[in-house]
Length: 321
Image 1 (cartoon, rainbow, N blue to C red):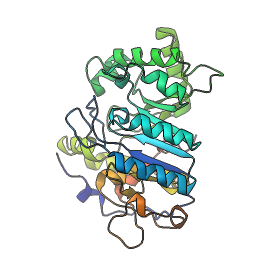
Image 2 (cartoon, rainbow, N blue to C red):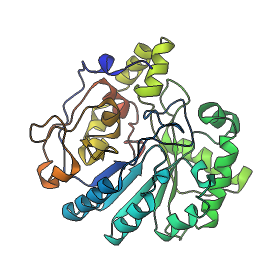
Image 3 (tube, rainbow, N blue to C red):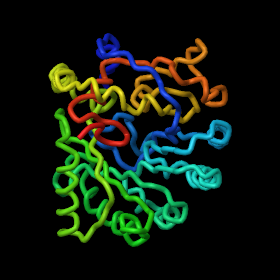
Image 4 (tube, one colour):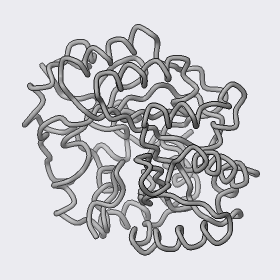
């Protein structure tokens, strides 16, 4: 695995300061039932890192003390953490909106037979990875048979009410390119997804979000191996839009790793670039006062261009039309 941070540290990316904290993003661990080529987490079936019960309790204490009303759960496959359901249930009792970054095929894993019903019961918003509506493209990026399994999982979610108008259960899909290029316009691609998935599989969903591939971890290492790293970085920089920097996720979100340490975003977490707070090299969630984060500088490096290129990219999809 090639290290990408040495190639990213020196940057001319514009400075960013934090706004009011609105979202707590929590990585529950790196274990996943898939091992995708684009994965910026290096997640996979052999990873054993998982957030402990103690740290999950600390996350809940922070939610309660901070008054934050959005909890964004990611991984790996966050549902494979034994504490996933407890965290969701307790967060919902605090009237916190919960988002699940779901890879879809986890719904077919042993022990997850009732996952769709659980998520619906807790009114969890789902952001599901579906890099294309075409079988060959999905399987090329995520592994043979993933497309068929994803379609079966989506049908489970539709049956539970997800994506159905008036249900209040949002099912969103997330697209990322299959290689070193920018995603197409989000609105246009969403129309293609809705048309193709409805006509071929009678599938319904709410929104499509497009996300650029980050030049870090597995994807970044692949770029280096193929001699494409510099070309991809040039593409991102040439497509940079200053306006996108005003709405990037790191201004209103902090990302917590499976050990409980804080970062400005999930990408910084993977590069081990901790949140700057109280002059400490690393800060744990149990030691953070949410009201003190506003106006702090965001830690930046060259990978930040991945969020501001073209129509922009964040955990919430495109930043501009």
